[in-house]
Image (cartoon, rainbow, N blue to C red; front, top):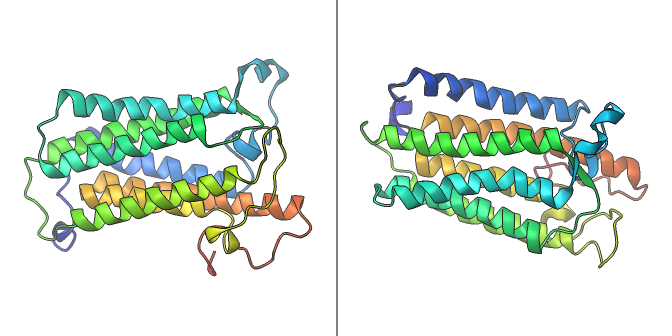
Length: 265
């Protein structure tokens, strides 16, 4: 703990926060393990991957609507925190602004960038929405409680800002490239190209992970750091499944393409 105190705030005096700091990232990481094993959250190319009773078919949403449902509550959490508590310290204001910008970008991408062809199971939309909303609200709340604690001796805010900017720009760029794989009216999948798609199949996930570590470095709390690791595990599992899906659908899928990390994984 003495070594960690140089980099992160001490845990706040809240049993609830200390419990969810462990529980929520573990749950998210377990979802990643399920993805790697073939049990998927049902959206994007895996929207109909798992068998479900026919009675649940009416609970499938258009993908764009499901994604808005997934992202918008977290966006509102950030906006409300900025609106009602605008005079926070610099670290807290940076964190809230970065989170709000992240989910605003995601909603705008849903509306103006992505080209959807499938549906999204309602349960999946609720699961993702709950995860994003709770993690966003808890990151902000943990930061608020940490203001009364001694600052870590090593300030990582500027590194966090740099990571966040790299992540959000890289994530948008590769989402834009993905959108270009389909012409107007097309619904099928193609092997994406350009940028880091030439080395990994999910560079947009890689940059999202970088964003979440940006949040963690801005925040320097145990909760934000543990959730960044949970997010990394989930997206690693999802990207592994995505690579297998492309390899099964396209005979010309390049063997050198990795799932998430260039030349490594």
